[in-house]
Image (tube, rainbow, N blue to C red; front, side, top):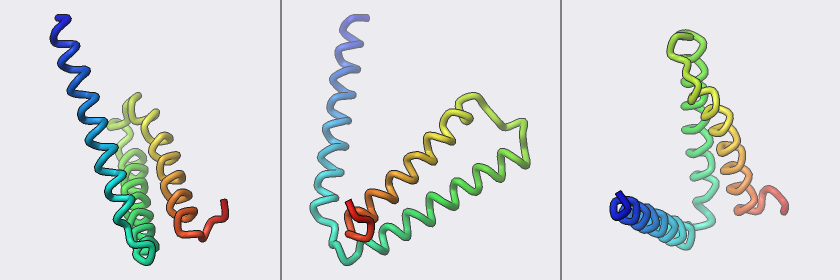
Length: 95
């Protein structure tokens, strides 16, 4: 059991490092002139999935879960933060 935990932790550290590197590389190669299109695309995709989630939750209340009641507000906060950071990055939102 002890060895499995160490392997699992190392694998998680590797995945976090790889994800951080990938995001850093992506951020360094974003053309600022294409950022508004990226922001609009993210906004539409996130808004659509949030709408569908709400629609399904209202239409089929039996599909509601405790996890979903926590994840939905979290997703909304991530949505607002991603949009705020994108607008800040482009200079549209002062900061």
